[in-house]
Length: 389
Ligand SMILES: C[S@@+](CC[C@H](N)C(=O)[O-])C[C@H]1O[C@@H](n2cnc3c(N)ncnc32)[C@H](O)[C@@H]1O
Image (tube, rainbow, N blue to C red):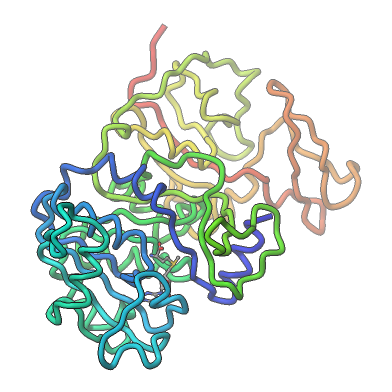
């Protein structure tokens, strides 16, 4: 599984996953009006490698940007691979250098009649004012924080291992952002409160499947979905990727079409929590006015005018549960009709068939037979305008 690779990379702090230009284009098309006259910062981006830099440099005039700043971390192993930088003092040991690029205009400098990547290259190689060294390029470095303060919008794919710190810093400095992360990070105690309070939501262009990221040549390609592309660069396909943003986009206001009706038989209550369990987002009943537990991927369809998010069935966010009971009171949230018993044979019951929907789920039993965890994490929501009959 590609996710196995991602987790291994995370553990080893291997953070070099390079975003495809097509993925950036598909998402950015939803936000163009936000960028006019703005300072954009890509602060985890080697300008010579990053497609974020390419995207904004090439569309600098179309988007009407005021300034583009890109900073390169000194640990970036692919630095210099792409546009090939040659200028005094920088090409001796390229992998050790942190630097920034600041662009305030992109013109047809080589006079070929079009503004393209060769003009950007020309600009970087000939205008000494655009490029300068940094101490570390770490987004947390005071030097980089000064750049962050200048910025209106941060757009990047930050290191997976530092995602929570990265978001924390954006919130601290009250910045607009559009960044890539893993959908499961919504369950972190640092991120979920932002979602509840509508200070962070998901972007529209990725809602399922996996995404291809280029990786350095020393990353293991031992999982399904890995390979070498036509340019000879290694890639890994990663599941669960999402865009996280606080820039408004139209799709976020599209209401989910609800077609199901509530019935006690089809929507069982949790044992110890006054809410119904809804196995799939598409099954949310149109006429239930209480709390509903839905899959995390509900967030792909979340429209704040239609639903209120009230909690999460997860360690770390216990204090966000609606009635403020301790997490321990909730760790056993399961459907009452599906509880596997001790006699079901040891620690797991892999074939418990849920009534109503006929799906199979795994429940884990603790040492004394108590249920300690249900497989499915749930977000708790309420319909703001349930249909009345
Ligand atoms: C997931 S990669 C994405 C790279 C690029 N943004 C892209 O999408 O193609 C994360 C990048 O952050 C860099 N990085 C790691 N730690 C960093 C830090 N503390 N500050 C800034 N950048 C960092 C890595 O070197 C890597 O290039």
